[in-house]
Length: 288
Ligand SMILES: Nc1ncnc2c1ncn2[C@@H]1O[C@H](COP(=O)(O)OP(=O)(O)OP(=O)(O)O)[C@@H](O)[C@H]1O
Ligand SMILES: [Mg+2]
Image 1 (cartoon, protein in one colour):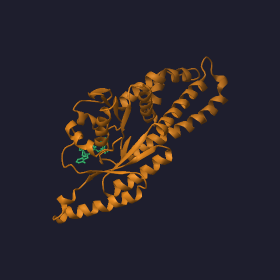
Image 2: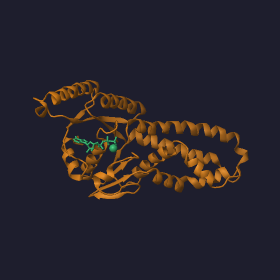
Image 3: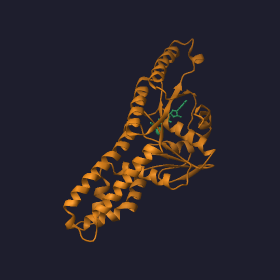
Image 4: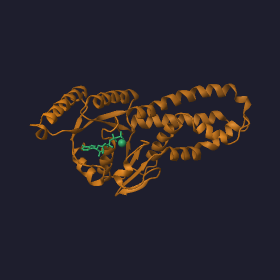
């Protein structure tokens, strides 16, 4: 996964890495950012569908619409059977449940899990939404897990009301799904945290690296993106001041990163939102 503050270069790094991985094995590039820009980079709509965008490379931008459609296909019938067995409700109850906070986040990660389990890809590169949204996405998992654990107790008390269906079996299934997602994140996921050499992006990068580690997600390291080249800045008061300010935050990140590597990418002063742009980024990425 590629994470970090808004606008720092997550999508660019994720897409360039995906191209790099595609040279060695089948790769899927997924964006869970509702305002994602992968479609612009690859020059075709990736909203809500998996599209081949190169040799060994497929990409998709997850939309709320797609996620809720998949949610309905997978779970709606079961939920309706449970609810309608003790409440006089029609299927419109599903519209109501669909609007509950966290449902789309939960199933975005279910989509990742499904793709990971499909066995079709060697690597899945996950381009995330900016920091806070992504952390919410992760913490909703834990919340959902404890919510379902509490739900088990509630349903046990009212078990006698149900005929034909066993809501506990459904809750067990959901609990298992959430546990599987948490396992996927903890065991098969590695994060690169992207930052620009400025105060807030660096501070946020350090915070998110800490939060990911606490969650149990391995952090590969940091990508410090858009460094100004010294030779271009020297001799110009404005650019020199900017260069010095960047160096301050570069040193701060280096000092705080501990044993984690900090990859550096200079400002390429060009539009990178194309395949050719991504090719320029690849040489800076870690050799894995
Ligand atoms: N090293 C670089 N040199 C020049 N331009 C860059 C560099 N890295 C990224 N950019 C450009 O900066 C802009 C923002 O990058 P990108 O979209 O990858 O950031 P992001 O973190 O995904 O943003 P968001 O939080 O909005 O999703 C893009 O136009 C991209 O082409
Ligand atoms: Mg992005």
